[in-house]
Image (cartoon, rainbow, N blue to C red; front, side, top):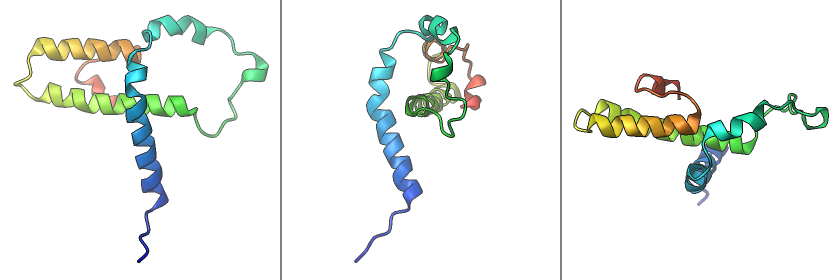
Length: 110
């Protein structure tokens, strides 16, 4: 008996498992504000990646992690049993990771 698993499903499950396994490591990083000065420095010509068809794996993992966290925060926002102070603190913590001011409404961007 041969079972056929679509490649898209396999790739998505691999990316999700990678995002979940890297999650705690990314959470321990320094705030995004600390990395901003290095990112604003001009990129040397030999290091330019403008022509790359796909983003770096780390960028994809980061975006997947942010999407998963935003979905969890949206649940907190929608559940009136969750205290407002808890939701505000989680939104501020998420905002420090994303480098933006996050609100319950801004979570729809993810």
